Amino acid sequence: MSSGGFFDNPRGSALDATGAIFIADSGSFFRGPGKVIRVDPATGAQTIVSSGGNFEFPLALVFDAAGQILVADENAFGGAGGIIRVDPLSGAQTVVSLEGNFRLPLGIALGLAGDIF
Image 1 (cartoon, rainbow, N blue to C red):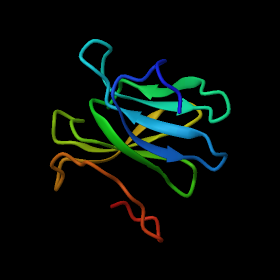
Image 2: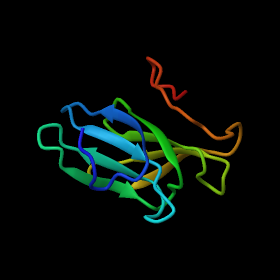
Image 3: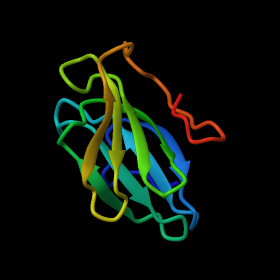
Image 4: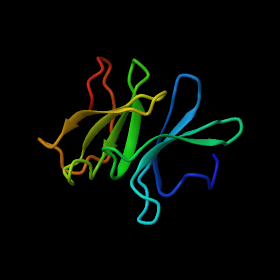
């Protein structure tokens, strides 16, 4: 994996269908809130896919069946945490779930039927 570049505080990782590496980076005091970073496995080149917006401290991510990224962020939405969907091409963020039963979500997984855990 690549070092330097856009990494501040890398936490979770996942591979997309092409083998590209995606990292949930929780950010830092000096360089701002969290982000999702794509890493080219052949060259190590890093690209920020999505940052700011709803992200505060993203910790884990997974790809759904449609190729969208689901990110668990422990501090999103005022500290309650939540799940944010990210389009890997545009970086657009969509709220999937917030508050309710969440208290600092630290991970994320998908069931066989697509349920988010």
